Structures are given as C-alpha cells and as structure tokens.
Amino acid sequence: MPIKDSELILNPDGSVYHLNLRPEHLANTIITVGDPDRVANVTKHFDTIEFETRKREFHTQTGTYKGKRITVISTGIGTDNIDIVFNELDALVNIDLETREIKKELTALTIVRVGTSGSIQKEIPVDSIVISEMAAGFDSLLHFYDSEAFQNKDISNALMEHTNWYKAKSDPYVVQCDAGLLKQLSSSKTVTGFTATNVGFYGPQGRVLRLALQDNDLNDKLANFNFNGKTITNLEMETAGIYGISKLLGHKALSMNAIIANRASGKFSENPNKIVEELITYTLNKLVE
Image (cartoon, rainbow, N blue to C red; front, side, top):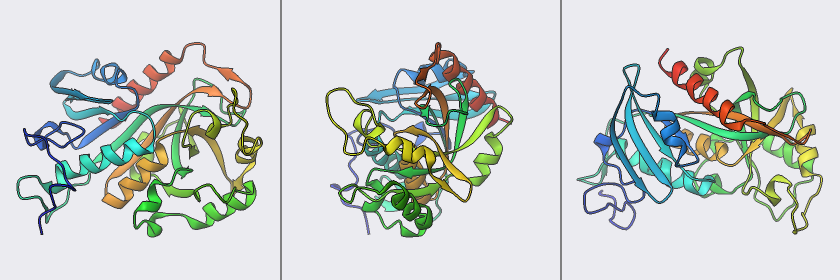
C-alpha cells in the first residue's frame, strides 16, 4: 500500500521534505556532522564534489575521496534532528518515491558520525579520539518506536539503579554500534568508549549558569558507573539516536568523537579545530582502506 502524502512529504522537485535530496544525490557511505559549516571541512579533502544543497541546518555535499563516493551531511544538534535525517536518508534508498511503496530489496547504508564530545574520565584527555562502542540515550526518541529488541535492558536497568534515576525522566536506552565498522575504524590512535547521549548542553550535561539542577551529582554518578568493565567515557547529543534508528532501519552506524573538553579535570582543548581536523582525515582514510 502506498505511503500517504502526509506521512512521506516530498517537495515539488521530488526531493525529500527536509533534506532537499533525491535518490541520485546520495552515496551509500555517509558522514554526518552536527555543524553545517563542518561539511566543507570534510569535503575540502575530496577529489571531486558533484552535488551540494542546503536547507535549514541540513547541509549536504556528495563527491569522491580517493575514488570512493561519499555524502557528507549536517544534522544540527540533538536526536530530534537525527530522527528527521535518518528517516529521510532511509526513504531515499528504501522507498520508491514515485510509487511511495517500500522496495522489495533494501539497501544498508554505512553512516559515520564525526563530531565533538566531552570526556568524563580523567584518563581520557582532551585532543583524543573516542569511538562509541555503545551509547545510552537520555532522550525518549527510541521509545516512540518498536525498539525493545535492539535495547540492552540489563545495562539500562543497572544504570538507573546506580544513578537513582529520577522517575520523571525518560528511561535510558542502550544501543550498540555496528561491530564491523568498529573494527574497521579502530586503531592505536583511538579509545573505545561508552557514550552518554544527552538531551541538552547545559542542565542535562551538568552545567550550571542560573538554573539549579535536579541532580547535581549525575555526572559523577555516570563517571563511576561500571557494568562488567564497561564505563561511560563521554557526553554528547546524537550518538544513541543514530545507533537506535540505524539498528531499526538496518543501516550500519558508528560515532567518532573528538574530545575537546574533559569535564573531570575542567580542561578544554587549546586548539579544538586541530583535533577535529585530525579526526576528519583519520575517518576518511579509514573508510577507503
């Protein structure tokens, strides 16, 4: 049965509503960044750029790097935008936009997030690279989908017990990355981590300006959490949503984090652009190996 116009919204040129992309614009290997301006920081390394479009916070360029076709797209901040971007990326490859019917043969995209993050462990210094083996989502995105089979309930329950999780907050969901991508992009230059995906930058990550926090000790509790040797390493705002939606849709996803702050020591990178640039070139080269 065709998907209704109100559910899959297309622009007059046949592109998907928010991203302004048509299927021919998209490569099967995708790099996501948060900042729209960071797209060009990635594609400046490309051999060629064949397509570019921009709408709201969603900036896309597709081209080739060392002969490999790659799309780079900005998501903006937060898992609410991940819901938009990843559903529309999937629609481009797995729904016939003319008939509005799901294709019989589905395509699995390879999606790598290249973003910034803050460490909550003293031993993970600024200017290091953390690869998220798994992520705990403190938002509620995955709870709106039939996602129980992809969540690690044991870790989630242990995390809530350890932190005395406030009952009015959404239960954390825990999802793993794609194992194949983890192996491909790991090296002696990276740290394998367990990422906490927050719903905001200030209060949800324990920052205090003028507003009091519900739990002043949450970051310390997260830093002290240990589940069979797995400790939470860093905080950011997209990874759990990326892993959750990718798992549900059958795509392969991995999150690469440039650590620009260490919340435990209070340090911030003296040159954050340098570690981000190193992460970009590292990721690109690993993707073409």
